[in-house]
Image (cartoon, rainbow over all chains, first blue to last red; front, top):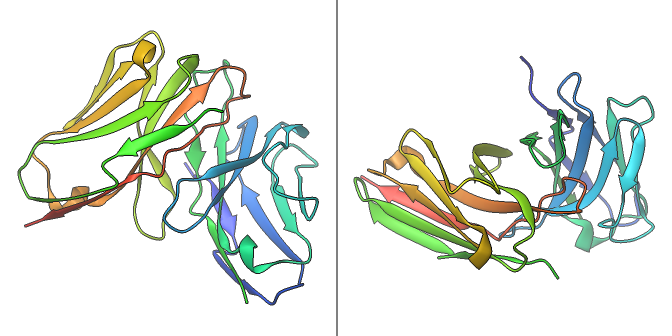
Length: 116
Length: 113
């Protein structure tokens, strides 16, 4: 079946612009995660949704970052007034959430954001 | 603070060698631990998931072990091939974290013919 998809795959923004990154999780997956991966580093957690509820947003680096999943499927990560330090790969992952602690997370290909 | 460390940071070996990648984590209260592979410009592919109650997990030429009490996991790759070249990431799922994963910085592996 189809995996996690993300769009766009690449985004170049001028400093100060707003951007929106989209994630389509695997159909039926309850849990959805956003991670940020800087060059040469492992991914860092940003936020977590269980269906449409955002249960953990502790990793969002500033109030310029906002995520939503209004119908419990597709999610959008929005970054307002982008800064150069926002340049990174943004990864989305989903999991079935059958039981806490047993799920494999399935990752999308990521969106590479470059802020000039 | 929950932290994950991977050693070595990079590894270059000739084809056919058996490899050991190390992962250590600061908090032994974990549900499970996943090993991922990441190819350049690509997302993450899950290789193995070890539950906290397990000591090891095997898939083909890959074997992952877990010693929760000492905060260590090892990924063993047998008979390495050039197609194994990638970055390998370790990610424990710490208890109480809503399933979020904490990643190490990874081990960049290059296997040359």
